[in-house]
Image (tube, rainbow, N blue to C red; front, side, top):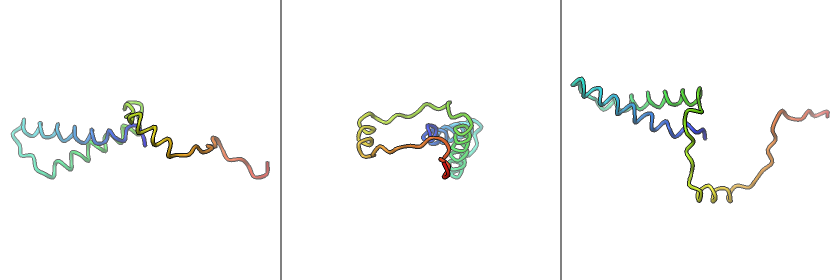
Length: 89
């Protein structure tokens, strides 16, 4: 999972809050459908930013106990890096 993926939720919530404050500041009605629209807009913005500039978002670390337990469940496997070997060689 990319480091920016959990930040999609934060981006959606921030967009909702900013739009709600802006609507109340201008004395406009904030309809229920706007919650979903603003969340989707924030999520899309964070996703684009995460794909284009992934180093902007800090990595969310799991607690050490959870990562320790999950490492015991997963067996180590060999990983081939680089192009596949040619069949004739």
